[in-house]
Length: 170
Image (cartoon, rainbow, N blue to C red; front, side, top):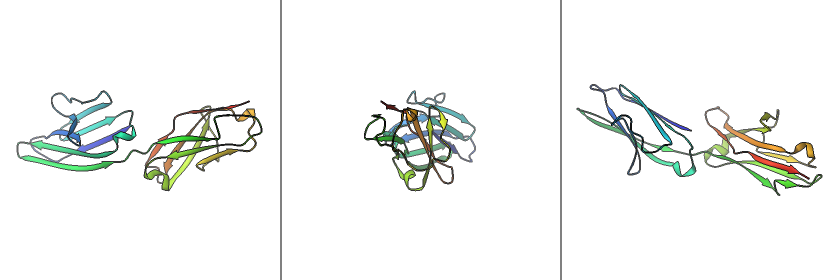
């Protein structure tokens, strides 16, 4: 989920428009009308809160927010970078007992450079595992399960959770 929080000091109160390129994504009029079912808008006097669910890499790009009232308009541009995690499995998510298998938490975007990682198996945190790669050598049936990773910046401001990958050991 991405959240855009906008505010302006104006009287009379401003109306809002959020655009990506030429496409209008959200407006505070009429009645907080979003352009997509993935977008929800809450407005107040001189504020706009936009939540975008189901963020995908195509959502990355330049956005423009414009506040307008009877005295004029002001705009700000921002670049929204999508940071998504995924698990790469090598050689395969289905392996024979005794073989080596590696799960790598791969992050798109600038998050990779200063990321730390957390690993989970069957929704339980695997304590002490903070590297981007989890290697089993040799892999055993006890290692089978549903894995996902969380990647976050060291300052804790950004977080990306991967989809779950099932590891099967024969």
